[in-house]
Length: 345
Image (cartoon, rainbow, N blue to C red; front, side, top):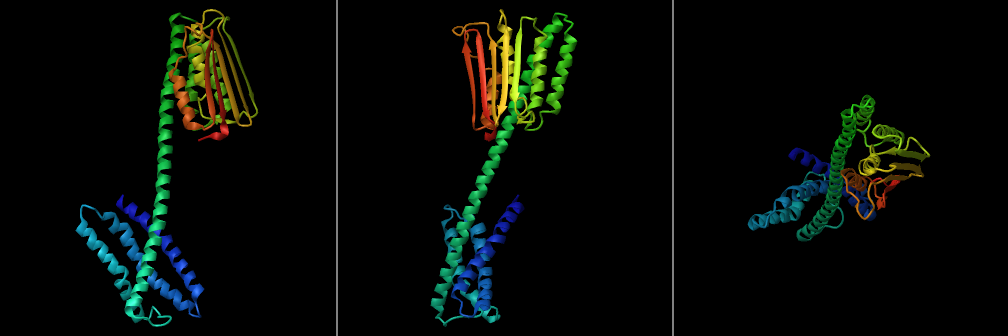
């Protein structure tokens, strides 16, 4: 981990140092009087020293400073004051000795020269520190965003892991009731369940599926539920889709259908019914499930089932523009879902 951190630090300075050098060269160019090339070499010589000093100060020394060790911190700052003043002057003189650095302009006294170099180095420290702070701030925001996305994805996976067993549990209950009654429809119900299981295992692993696939699973689930009832159950399922390949998160709609049967039709003694309508136009989804219930509104409060609770949370994580409305009336329950599919979070 430490090596990876050092590599990231070096990557920052690999582009920061050239940018600082170019800025200084452009500044020298604006003041150049026929000595542009020697000035560029001079800037390169000074930037090498300042870059190494700034890297050491900002990445190693300052992060280790502590109020608990004031003496150590004082001597560290004193050392870098020397590095950025007299040490910088010595580096310049060393370059002159090696015929790398070419003195330009009028000669100046040593104390004045040291003052100029100290001001230059302080400006460099400020530049490096500000850019480094901005870059680190952006990296932290990106890391926080990635962590938020990862947490949301983990929560979505958890919600799906809850929804699927809950859905299968209710379906198995239906098959159990048929088997207990020794119904000839039990084999057909098992066959339909196998189709649903195959769909869940192989079609719902990705973040999206075509809406036509979700329609198939709803059809299979409705057919499975109808096996439990006689001809008194009325089911109307219609849809108006401009594109059957429109993508949706898998199993997003099934909780409303399941809720209609489990908490509505199964409790209705007289003329049970389920009306389902789905439309998608211009990326606007409208899904309404209306079903009979066994009690008037005064005696039957809206139930917050696992399926509905999970659906609400999934919508919060998936979309920014949606509305899920449930209405309990006398012997009727209506769930209406509206989603702007373009508002995916």
